[in-house]
Image 1: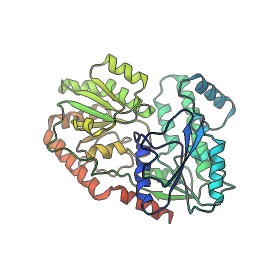
Image 2: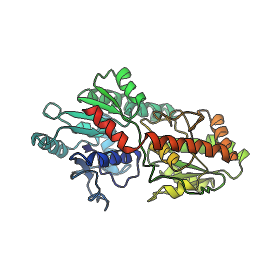
Image 3: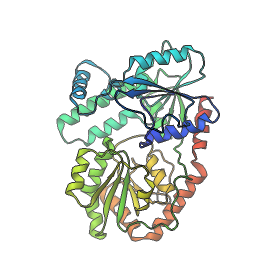
Length: 396
């Protein structure tokens, strides 16, 4: 199982999905986990003994901190001399490529899984004999295309469009070299087949959640007017949508619910979000937290006002399992089999989104019905064991 870095801390949707699936797969299969470890970064204490793989191999990698001089120089070199998008180019690692070839030559493995697109730049496909499968958590180019469309600065928009074009070309080229591609939603699988023209798409696996770990307290006593947002706060789509919510949606909510405010739950908030929280008393940041559940319990409703991104939102399932009703854009809930009006409220325009949030804030009974139905759906259909078995069946 090849990935671009360690799994701990479990503070991103991609890490959570991979960790949960590998724990299930490791119950019945021998798993070797191969990944980069950035120079100077220490493994989290939990990583060594975590039961997601029997063997873990770490390869030192050079990954300059974003915004540093070394990072800027790497970006300039990429723009001038590479055809790859920067987010792939920076994960090239010759030692990881060689280690992967050695593992393949050992003859010990029945399958090699590339988790996300980023490690694929290190696969020497013409030399690997073991079947290789790409596990794609997103349609990566679509994220960049949506981000580019949101940029108001013409130069920034041009840069993002260039990266989107490069990503699309690389995503098609690299994906086609695998024996199979597995997506995380029917929509993503259809994009890979129909838009990219790939004939090696095996299917998709659903999103899961641990409904024993995430469960609502009895009774649930959220703080009046507190609206939650959950996610990695150094990821561009999340940063963009929090600014959008505070600027374009929250004022309309406050007009009818004067005590309304937004609690942003997530790691590494970007400087622009830190400034936002300083300047706007209705925007609150938790920063990195060990456990999101107590913070979710404080919220009357969770919002997912995403306008870009891809894959599926594990955070929606976590909130639902914790008993928190959810309002999302269509993009935010993309790929999740949750019926609008029954298990979630979907709204795309700022006014409609604000109306949906106000509806739940002003009607606790409606909010509770929505949350109860959503949790019941997850308990019945979305355990990680079901997800792992689906993954295995696609590879059989």
